Length: 367
Ligand SMILES: *[C@@H]1O[C@H](CO)[C@@H](O)[C@H](O)[C@H]1NC(C)=O
Ligand SMILES: *[C@@H]1O[C@H](CO)[C@@H](O)[C@H](O)[C@H]1NC(C)=O
Ligand SMILES: *[C@@H]1O[C@H](CO)[C@@H](O)[C@H](O)[C@H]1NC(C)=O
Ligand SMILES: *[C@@H]1O[C@H](CO)[C@@H](O)[C@H](O)[C@H]1NC(C)=O
Ligand SMILES: *[C@@H]1O[C@H](CO)[C@@H](O)[C@H](O)[C@H]1NC(C)=O
Image (cartoon, rainbow, N blue to C red; front, side, top):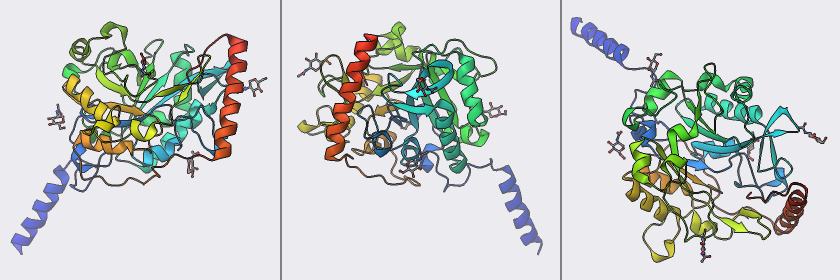
């Protein structure tokens, strides 16, 4: 009897000293139990380039779309890094996610998109999501913070101890620490006008991340060389010495003439392929990821692609992370989604719109 009581007491003590939430061996962080104790910065996350800009029936198969599936589907399929572009529409009262110009593709307000991500985070308590929003319209930090507050997502926002410099040795918290603290959203803005004390979770991209070029027009021209920030351009050692995290862009544009570039679908099965050894893999995601990992002495933190479902691109990420115990992902078709009418009309529609915009603004478009 006494020994049973002692046993029960021992059990209770064991349980009460376990850390909350991420404790059981069966728990998966970002879809894998073996990632829980890894630093967030020391995992590779699949990124969707221009996550909100979708090429499907909801956008009349827009050629400005970089993904076939919306942000919620991306997250459920294992994507953990989302990029997008913020633009003012008409006045500074409307902050939307638009592709180059809101006349080309307007994916709605920033706060609506953030609400969708917040809902997904509510439903997936062991997942950490990272955002990178570009800011070519010089949107004020206050205006960005208003969108975040309106969406309700700020309760998940992580703020590092120092918002003006990367953590020492580039080591960020582990996924389990972020999950246990409930701070499962990390947000970078490129670029942030000013650090706000009331919205210090909005982090300046160039302070924490370096990236290769994003403008490739063929599969032989990918490069791992840092293109931004300018302070480390061309120097991998300078970027790593500054404890910046590697972001690897891996997507291709097709030149349409007159300076118009659209996401390249023709080569997408090669572009996103996980293969890394055969000769036919030149320019594949798997090969490029290995080349950059060798140059950096570590795999990229963010591996960013168009049409993420093709490949599937997540296979390359699993290889880089060395995980074989993936769980909790929904499967997504690995096919190009299109109809012949969509191709024809989408193409003509985009070309006409882009030409009108070029005539009106004198701007060229990479979309
Ligand atoms: C990073 O992850 C690798 C496994 O891919 C592990 O061997 C290494 O110890 C980790 N480093 C840190 C600093 O967490
Ligand atoms: C995303 O796409 C899925 C599948 O088409 C759809 O069920 C869902 O409503 C969409 N979500 C949003 C927020 O648009
Ligand atoms: C911007 O202005 C145009 C033209 O007046 C109008 O059609 C559109 O609805 C406006 N957009 C927003 C988000 O206010
Ligand atoms: C988690 O929260 C505690 C208490 O607020 C804080 O001391 C600790 O630094 C947080 N850890 C991380 C990784 O943010
Ligand atoms: C590939 O693109 C690069 C620039 O991105 C260009 O210099 C090169 O000529 C292109 N090669 C081919 C075969 O088109």
